[in-house]
Image (cartoon, rainbow, N blue to C red; front, side, top):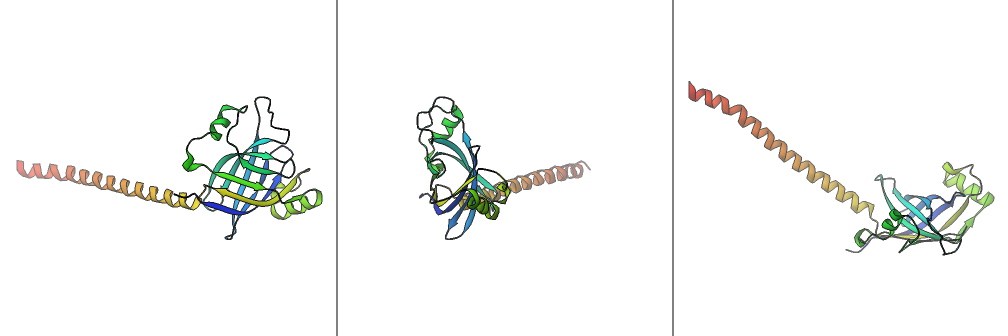
Amino acid sequence: MAKATMEGIASIALLPCGSISGHFIQLPDSICYGLQGTELACEMECSRGEDYRLIKLTIIDYIRKKERVVVVECRGHDAARLRNVDQAHGWEKDVIGMVEKKNAEHKITVSFDCETLKADKAAEDHIRQFMPNLAGLEDVVVNVGKMTVAGLNFEEEHVKDEEETFEADIKLEGENVELEKGTFEAEVKPEEETEVCS
């Protein structure tokens, strides 16, 4: 089955602590997804340059109340580029485990390139308008650019979840019918026995 690919525009605030926060607008349908990312600390000396870091990125579907996590590399200081990472040697074992999952069926790929960098007043205005929960934070820069997310289909997962719930309900209903039938037979049986005795 071909992986779903979503394309659109992302607006990402780079916070001084190394975290990121923002949203991804899938085009042409203008569906908004939340983006939350935390920097992953490196256990050992990392030799990939000072602008290199790993981010645990959570993509949030507000409509279906679902989220998926993917580890991405972030390069470029204030003008960020996000890409998937294939190996994470030097990071904690659970990070390496997340990165090196062999289940390609559920592999999510992310690509983002900053096209517009907003700092100082431009960043403050953008945050006030589009990310009011971050208003008041200092030294925040905003990246706006094209983003592509492949291998993620919240709608398909939602339908699958509904089908599984429906099947579970039918199974449970069938079990209840069997239970009621057994109870009914148990209630009827003593009466039959009583009739035979009399």
